[in-house]
Image (cartoon, one colour):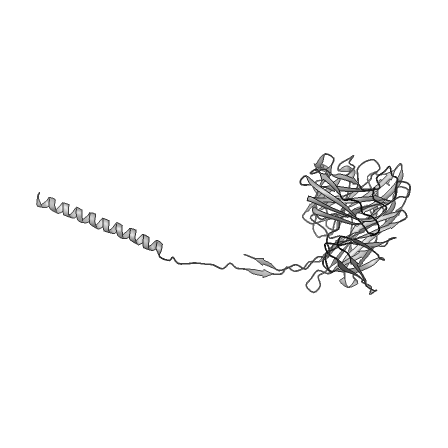
Length: 463
């Protein structure tokens, strides 16, 4: 082998040995680097805890009773049939009042809106309720309702669009910007979105009235879902009935804020009526899915025997009616538990002849915080309180400084307390549900009580 070739072989061997050494070092370095602790980096997210500024307490009233088609020039025009007398308080809330316009061509059909600024870092306690009595050839009866805060979504359970019914969906916007409302109607064929109930603009500070029959005609048990965008609205239903050209009553039906698996309707009057006709009827709807509901009647008078609970199957999207007229005459709390969220209300009438009246009893939410309530003027007014899971003491204090009334409500029982028109403070040691009810000759009405808005709690914001 020549000297030059020996040099090349030696050089190549040296390169191979050096390359192997470098590769081995790289592998060992990688292994050591993986095993060695890596630098740790951590960042604490920025957290800002703030308490939202409380807003104004805002209530919208149902306003006067309305009559449709009294004008010979326009069968579709509305007019005021009976003014509403409103009670509000407490006086130290310094609430201001404005008119909700647009229901009629003049100011006689305007409703009242009340606004109170926050006080001491919390929403001001404010309650209001009104009543009206109609006595005309085309409209007769007594109606009472509470003034409510506007909602983005609500449910109206009541009324009909069959012969003799002349019901009205009333939408009020007490806010500062217009609202756009969509109405869906649940009936015998399920849910529908009628064109006449879509994209309804309710101006700020205004009202809009939609005949229920114009949404879905021929329905015995409709339920209306109200969804608003842009601004929340207060929705209510004026239900009125005519039998053989004789007026058979009127009512202003309160909304339900949401579907729930538990509905409690305090103070439902079951009256002795014609046995051939249903004088007390419960209407239920499970909007989302098939469900089973258990209906329990709890008498206000403990000496009255309670009927056995009844199980009712519910088909999704189809309203169901349950005849409760078989119970002994008296006042009851209708308690409904379901396997899925439902909405419902109970209808009762004083009779089926001339001069009769009816009422819709809407489910009442639980009250656990001190709340301002208002009792509208009317005959036979009672505060009916339905107890919860434990015995509790409930105190009702008149805002005018009168003597407080304290009553004990047993678990699962109901108590009726006679009350006069005015505003009160209701305090309870445990959650209860309550309603103001009225019962007299040719007069029947009810509205549920809602709890006061609680002060907003602190929020944690992560930018």
